Image 1: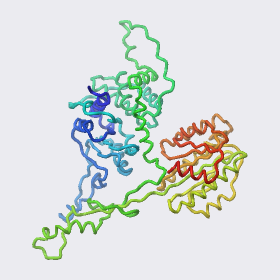
Image 2: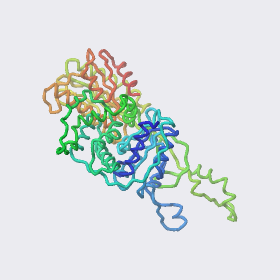
Image 3: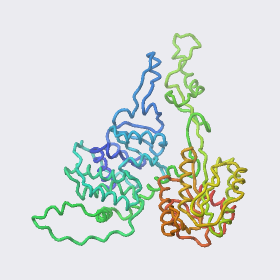
Image 4: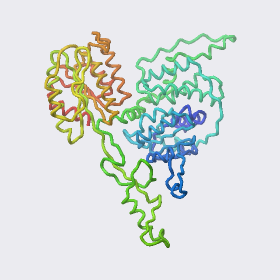
Amino acid sequence: MTHPVWTDAILALRLLRIDPIGLGGIWLRAGFGPPRDRFVAALGAGRRLTCHMSDEALLGGLDITATLANGQPSYAKGLLSDPERLILSSAERASRHLAALLAKTLDRRAGHCLIALDEGIEDEAPPPALTDRLAFHLSFDGLGAKDCPDTPLDPVDARLADIDDDAVRALTAVSLKLGIASLRAPLFAARAARAHGALHGRDVTTDEDLEAAIRLTLVPRATVLPQDPPEPAPPEEPETPHDTQTSETKPPEDQLLEAALAALPPDILKRLAPTQRLNRAVGASAQGALKKGTTRGRPLPSRPGRANSRDRIDLIATLRAAAPWQPLRRGNAPRGSLHVRPGDIHLRRSQSRSDRLLIFAVDASGSAAFNRLAEAKGAVELLLAEAYASRDHVALISYNKEGAEVLLPPTRSLVRTKRHLAQLPGGGATPLAAGLKEALHMAVAARHKGFQPALVLIADGRANIDLSGKADRTNALADALKTARGNRMLSVPAVVIDMSKRPEPQLSELAKALDARYAPMPFADAHHLSDVVSAELA
C-alpha cells in the first residue's frame, strides 16, 4: 500500500514539473535506501552538484588548460550558466558560500530549480537561506521499500490556474497561525495551489487546491499548532438550482485551516518537530563557526582540484602526484624536464574557528541593581580569564531608566574591562525591550565582522518601560516579546538568567520567544553564573 508521505512526494514532483521556477525546488531529508533511490529515479535527469565544487566550476571562468594549449585566454561555462534542474547531493554539508550562490541563482528565476538531497543526522541540515527558497520540504524517515512503489511521471504541459486575492489572504493567514516567519511560504503555497489546479485541468483554484498547497508547503514549516481551533461553521441551507455561485466561494481562513489540519495525522507536528529544530540549529551554535579556507587556520589534507583564482596550489602534493608518471610522460624529452598535468594539481586547505562574542545584557534598575551588576562584573572577568585560550570576546550592555547603554564594547582586554566596570550606574525603571534591541543590534554587527555572537540576558522580568520610553507594563512586555521573536530569524544562541527571588513566568515566556535557554538563579554568585553561562552556551 502506498504511504501518504510517498503520495505527497510524487505530487510535489508533479507540481514542480508544472512550475519549476515559481516553486524553487524540493528539500528531501532521506538516507540511502529504496525510497530515496525511487524518488531520484522518478525525478529524472538533472545536473549533479557537490558541496566541494569551486566557484569556477559553478559560475565559469578562465580555463587554464585550454588557455595554455591555445596560447590565448579561453573561458569555460559553469554548471549554473544554463537553465537546468540541479540536484545537490549531501546538501547538509553545503557551506554558506555555496548556499548564497545557489540562492542567488534561484532568485534570478533564470530557469533553475533545485533538489537538495539531505542525508544528515540529528542537527545536520542545509543552511536556512537555501531551504527557505525551496517550496517543498519532505522527509522519508520511517519509510520502507513497500511504502514506495515505482511511479513513472508523464510530461506535463499546463497553464497555471488563476487564484483570487481572497485565497491568497487566506493562505497568508494560515501561514501566520502556524507560526511561519518566512514571507516566501504563503507565496509558495499560492504557486502550489495554482499548479495543483493546472494538474487537474482547472482554470481557477478551488478549496481542494488550497488544502493540498497547505499540506505540501505550509505544514512542513509549521512551528506551532493553533491553540484554539475555530468552531465549525453551521451547516448551510441547501442550494437552489438557480444559486450556483455560492459553492465556488472560498471559505474563511479559519475554516480552511481547520479543514487542512483535520486531514493530517494527529502527530504530524511531533514528527515535523525535528525538522524545525534543524532549521534553528544551523548557524545557531554558540561556539565559533568552523571556516575552511586556503590561507589561515589548521592545515587540512590537500585535495585534487582545478587551479583557480581563489585557491592556492599545494606544490609538494602536486609534485608528489606527478612524480610516478614522469618516465611515461617524458618520452624522448630531455632528462630533467617536469611534466605536470591538470589531474596532478592539489589545492591547499585549512580550517579555523571564528571568534565568539558573549554579549551580556544586564538589568541595572531597582534596589537590587548593584548586586546584579556586581555578579555580572565578576562573571565577565572570570570568562575573560579564559578568553585568550578560547578566543572569546565579551561585551556588556546595561539597561535602566528609559533606554540601554553599551558600557563595554567587544573586547578581550582584561585591563580595559576592569576600567569600564569600575563604576556602573544603577537604579530607575526597566526598559527590557530596549536592552534586548540593543543586544540584538550588536549581535548583527558582530556577525558582519566575522564573530559568532551569543547573548546572555540577566533580568528580573518586571519590564515597565516600552520602546517609546513610556511607563506601561502591558506595552513594555509586548515590546519585549516582539523584539525577542526577531531573534528566531537571526538564530543567535541565547540564555536568559532569571535573577528574581522567585521564578518569573514572564521571563520564561520571554525565553521561549527568544528561542533561548531559561535558567532561574535567585542566589547565584559570579562563579556560579560563569559556570552556568559556559555550560548553557557550550
